[in-house]
Structures are given as C-alpha cells and as structure tokens.
Image (cartoon, rainbow over all chains, first blue to last red; front, top):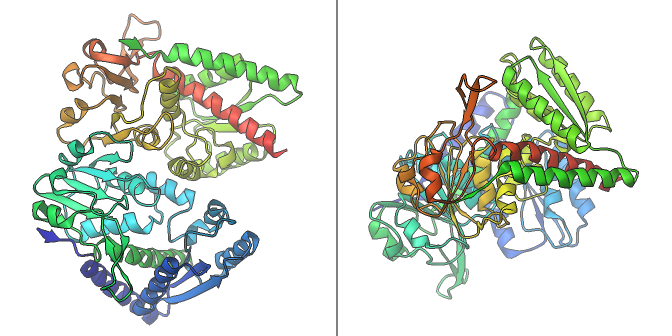
Length: 294
Length: 294
C-alpha cells in the first residue's frame, strides 16, 4: 500500500510555484494576484478563504480578500465582481460559495470574467473542459488528476468508477479521466444514488473515486486487490479531543480498504491540500496568460 | 424485439411542431426562422443542409441558406455570422461542419451568439448542458434522449455503456444520461479505443449506445438478452443497387443483435431522423425564448 499524500505532493508543487514567482519578479514581471470574495461569516467558508489567502502569501502571490456582509444585495455583489473583472492587477478571483439565499449563485458565477475564473465554475470554462480546450479546470478534479500524475499512477486503459455526480467533483472528474490525455484514457463509470449493484461495479474497478460525503461508505469488500482509491469526502465529525472540536472523516473505510489498495489517499492530507494548490496553479496560469497577451 | 423507429417518432414530433407553428401564426407571432451557413460544395454537407432546409419548410418555419465559396476568408465568414447574430428575424442558425482547413472551426463556433446556437456547440452551451442549466443540447444526443422518452424506454437505475467519446455524440450523451433527469439517472460507462475487455462491459449493460463509425462493430455475443441498443453509426458503403450509389450501415450487426434486444434502432431510420428533428425543436425553443423576453 502506497499513501497518495496530497500534503507532500502539494508541498512540492508550492515550492515549484514559489520558484516561478521569484523568476517572474527577477524578470521584472508583476506578482500573480488572487482575490477572494467572501459574503457573510460562515465558519467553514471563512476557514477555506483564509487558507487560500495564506497559501498565496506563502508562495509570494499578492492576495486580496473582499469581505461583504451577508445582507449585501445581489447588485452590490455584482458591482464588486465587476471591479475585480476590470482591475488589471487582479489575475484571477473566486467567489466563495455558498452564498446567502437571497443571491442567485448562478448569476454570480456567470458574472465572473471567464479569463479570471480560476475556480473554473463559469459554464464556458466547464464547456471548454468537456471539449478539451484550454481553460481553468475546477480545483478538486484538477487536484485529483495532478495527484495521480505526480505519483505516476497509471490511468490509461484502467476502469475507473466514480461515485457521486456533483457538478464540482464527480461529473467533471469523470469527464476528465475519460479524455484522450494523461492522466486520462480511463474507461469511466459514473455511479450515483440511483445506481444498482454498486459493489459489483466497484469490485471490477482499477480506480475508485468516492465523492459522496458519506463517512466510511466504501468498505473493504467493495474493492478488489490492488485498487487505487481516491477519497474526496471530508465530513466534519464532532471530536472533543481535537483542539478545533472536530475531525475530518473521508468516504472510505480506510482500515478495511487500505490493506487491499496499491495507492490510497488519506483524509485529511489527501485530496484536500491538492484543491488549494490547484487554485494556485490556475492563478499562475491566469497571470501567465495575460503575460502572453502583452 | 421492438424497433425504435426514429422515422415514426420524428414524424410525430414534426406534426406537433407544425401545429405549434400554426398556433404561433394564429396568435400573430412571427414564424420560427432557422438559417444555415454552408461553406463550399462538399456533397455530404450539401445533402445534410438541404435536408434541414427542407424539413423547416415542411413544418412551416422560415429558412435561409447562406452559401459561401470554399475560398471564403475566415474574416468574411465571421462577418456573415455576425449578421445572423444581429438579425432579429433569425431565431437560430447553424454553420455546417466541417469547414475548409484555412478556417479555425473553434473560432467560428465561438463566434455564434449562444442564444442562437441551436446546434449547441458553443462552449457555454456545452457547459450549461453539463451543469443541467437551460441550454441548447446538440442534435444527436438530444435526439437519442427524445427517442428513448417517446418510446417509454425506462432509463432510471439502468447501466448504460456508451462506446465512443466524441465531442458531438458519445461524451454529451454519457453526461446527459447520468444526470438526475428523465430520461437519465443511468449508471453510465463511457468506453472508447483505449478500453480493455469491452465485451465484458457491454454484456453487463442494460443499454448500449454505439457511436464509433465502425460498421457492424457490436456483435451478438457482446450483449445480454433484453438489451436496449442505440446505433449512432452511419457509414456510407458503396452499393450500386442503390440509386445514389451507396447504403448507410450502422455500428451494430443488426442480424445478430436484434433478436436479443428489447428495443433497437434501425439504420437508416433510427437516430438519423431524430437528429434533424432535434434541430427543429431547438429552433422553436429559440423562437419561444425570444418571445418570453418581449
């Protein structure tokens, strides 16, 4: 069993990104600049956004946090987004989701200039991903691909079963792995809540990606020996022994599945750290894309 | 064995569309208007475009054919497209592909106003399809879904194996059938040239969709009893006994597979006629969408 450590892989990528930033600066170029828009005070969102801002600073990016109260009107939010669209110093930005109920998330997502949409949520970027055109791929699916690639996990010709069809993980990762690329060229089965005989499918799989948000869902008897397992689940479980009062639990029963696996991601320290680093990679790409235009 | 006749189903839909047009006219609304841009004199393209124009006329749509020589510059073509984008009488239009080598197809596809992109090829429309947002779904995948729906073929919980991952058929139909919609809610496996042990997969499938362009590829021993088979292949085979000198052959060995099938599409007369009718449905949708805005 080999641990697919997102912590180690992302640390390596961050070092590379920091070197690239230094090189940009030494060439007289501007620092990559990521902005994040946070609406309201939701604890989870605040933690995520702070982690993103901190990660930027660590590798030498500029970062800007736009904080708005949860009473902000949609019009006001759209004006703030427009300022970021038009600010030439901002290479890319994200709007942390979820947004309050009185704001139409889809309108907000589509108001972001696709050239600065480093979250890859704009429909035209999703479409370009499907069509295998240059684009920003959203952070979690891209992080999974990068993790497989950097750890030399062979995907070509493998049967990959993806469990969960969400717009931000299951569906895009299933599309990405089925394309004629590396990583890619998998035969991909996309399974979900309506799937019958799921275990029959997962037991045939060379690679299983679980993105359900159901702690411990994938059991030992559901996989074959030598399987590669990617666990996207990160459910917060109350745990008074932890200083923040909870621990993260994945969708995989790690104790049962890991002995049968050739590669497996831990939770925490697997897909999670890869997600933030993907955003940083997209931001550099946005900055360099602009560079090519000048 | 039940024949999934695209000829019959599309005839029924055309009748319904013709009634809707009459109703629009009787309400004092304008006639739906589809334009097609044809570059060059390629025989296949000419046949397809003429069939589309003829289908429009039959159900009472206005149609316009913009014919350009194959020496047309990209700039000229883009200007013609812009005229169609700006012409308020045109509800939707298509640019018949393929285009000559000196023209960048992707630039052309992205120059079409997504609101008039009844072929559903613009990345933002592809992205909206993935995200299950209102959009134009491209003609062949939509035709397949409509054929399943109109013939009450149950898809929920079924395992569907799609063979072929093209941007215009295999990939979108695999995405559409995996969503939480009806038709949809299938467990979908997308197989392609790098897939190993394909027969093991197809023999498990409740639904097999073949979109490879390899005549007779799907054999009787590759499917289980009761399978639903959708044959997207339409390869032209030279045949002097036919008045146009060729016959169309599908990707399915019909003689072997049909006795084991619960439903199967013939070639010709299966998916083909559904493709044109999907374009007509999208054009009406475009016309009605505009109506809602006024």
